[in-house]
Length: 235
Image (cartoon, rainbow, N blue to C red; front, side, top):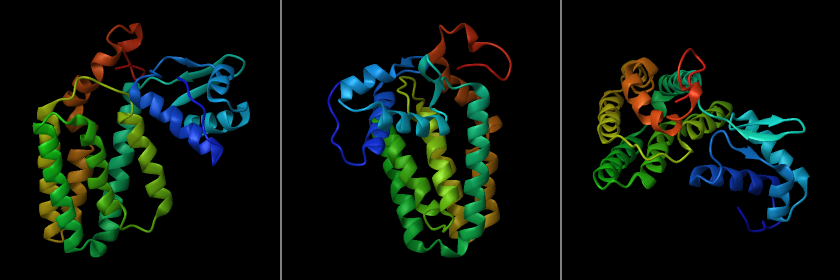
């Protein structure tokens, strides 16, 4: 990691920089961040770096260890289950609350994005798949005026998908797009209850998606001795 940052909204820039390092694989789960070393590399004081790290800790990306540095957190099975539960509940709630605000233009945008995602999958373009998937879900989330809920949900999704992986599963991604189509069919009918049910009980259901979830996450920690057993299982 190297390169200095410009001094505007510095703590926010540091936050985005560290998140990018995680996304690109320069900061891997289980690694330790040395605050002094990072500050020197970026040419900044420790204050904006600490602010950025506090933000990352609140979102679950890191754990600050007094006098020992900062540890990049590993995903455990309970973390993934909790994330799916939270996302499913929030998205289902927003759809039921905001169904009257979802217009034909929103549905057309959803259809277009889902087709783009299918194209991404068939072309093995997984670098754009996650971004398009976020855009898909944000189409209906953005109709809500509940800003705290929308701000809460995004870092949870990033926590699930920010670290680089090599084991994307076409079958799962295509099935996700089919679930999007089922969701869209209920939206077209104005059936918020069934649309919300697809989100909560299928698309974001840990139990329903469990087989693919294990397959998706397992390779990152295959050599980790903590990968077995209990709610603390690491993928």
